[in-house]
Image (cartoon, rainbow, N blue to C red; front, side, top):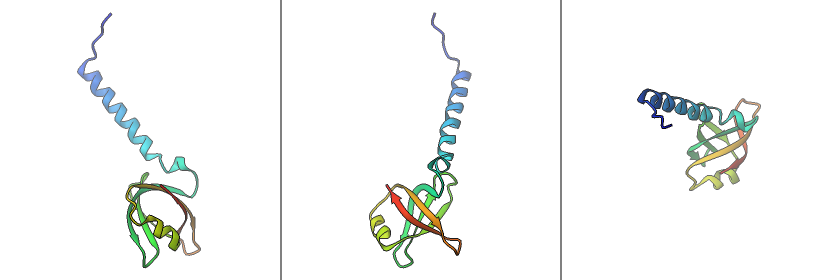
Length: 100
């Protein structure tokens, strides 16, 4: 028995697959655990000891304060990273660990 897939079914399958893939990306940070963000490195500011990522879940930029060691470790890096952070008393985000 040889069944053909209709163009309509192919389109529906493609839409469902796209929705599944999109939902997996949207849940990327929630699935990482508390106080963790994942995203693409956008910029590093050595003077203010900060770096900014484009968050994988929200697609919004998030800026973290970091130690000199973390900032120097990010120099020359391009790509996605995972940031473990703590909230500061002033409401900012302090990166405590970064993984590539």
